[in-house]
Image 1 (cartoon, rainbow, N blue to C red):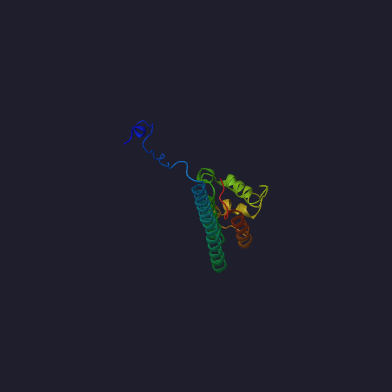
Image 2 (tube, rainbow, N blue to C red):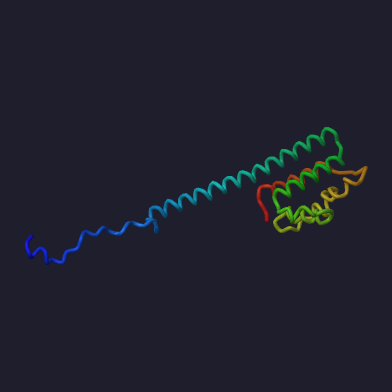
Length: 165
């Protein structure tokens, strides 16, 4: 070596700092966003499908009760079964603490409020729906079964396709 080379202030080769994992590159952010959107879309589809399945099954059960009523004409049995069906559907849609303890006039008022958008319907409290709280305890009740079935079909169509809180 020459004396000039020894006096040069040279440093050893330095490698760049390693690339960190955070923050990710813009492409990874885009991929994360697409995955989250796909996940929410799938969850939304599953929830929508589950709710529409509840509505379909409820309407099938109502149709079976209607067929049974047309065959045997037992009005008291019809009102008991329709009341049970309504209660089961309501417990599937609304929070249990809001629905489970309702009986008598409070139950009918809840059904009326959930029947229309403005909540001012009176088909259960003052109309044909009133038999749901009277007929199970009345041995010889007179019920317009077809009108009651139609009312409950309206209630199912209005409520069973959505989840309420």
